[in-house]
Length: 381
Image (cartoon, rainbow, N blue to C red; front, top):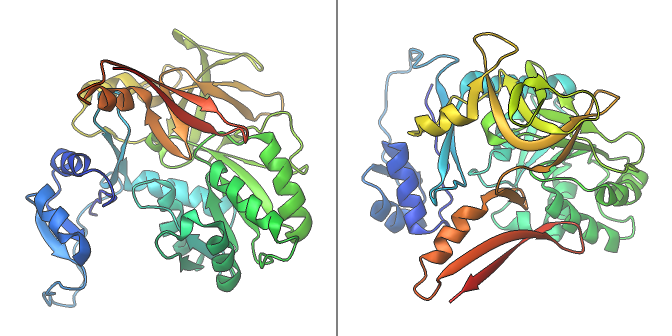
């Protein structure tokens, strides 16, 4: 019944201190090499893994400490004020997401998932907990291996990994390496790749079809979902070799509803083919933002279509396609995704303006030759 707050020790000390103070964490688990940073950043009790003195308790069953509405985790995402914001996700939302995954893409004892994502990103929930539902196995990738396509291929081959999750930019690098292997990479076990965290370009799916589907029979699934709706809310399975003008984000998972409404009029649903703002409702909705009731009220609004229910305003532009899938068309606000990291451009601008010689700063996202977003900062000194 407890909740966790994942913190990357490579974060700047100010960010770590803010997250620990804002979350009110009572216990901090860390490794010996991070003990100095941990004690400097927090007044919480620190438990050093590998050095802790364990207290032996009675072996009787413990009483349940919480229920389905109890908090499961708080993941901090980029915030427009210059500070990250903590998204509170409950146990029932996590269970609904994992159950939907298992129903649509069932795992069994022959399956192996690869754990490679930093815990401070919610894609780690996919890796850490899904395998349990199907009695599958989990292959742990050594730290740093997630950035090395050669190491990823080696781990998949040695571990007989059957499912893996990539952000599109890492999938691009992965395919670059696979291409150099000329069909000889040890990827025969890999049944399906899930790609999410940023927009998936059709040219990348075409490369996947040539390099992975044709050579190894691997299937590709595009996934979509903000942290506020528990990891992913929609899936689209590429079935035709990936040759699409655009790659849809698919249709909602179980117990999830998606609405595309006219901008400025939340009660007016858009017809098929008409662009509008995407709202999400259902079992995956987060409780809200920790210690930020005003922002919670702004983003989690009353659902005019289902009395007594809330829905989340994604800030994404989208439209329904005739086949019942949804096409993602970009962001409304000043937020972008870079390599799966959700970034508020205003937060970066705020940090640049703290520098002594910077008078003005503007940050924009630009598309590179591979179709991936990169950040560009313009400053006036």
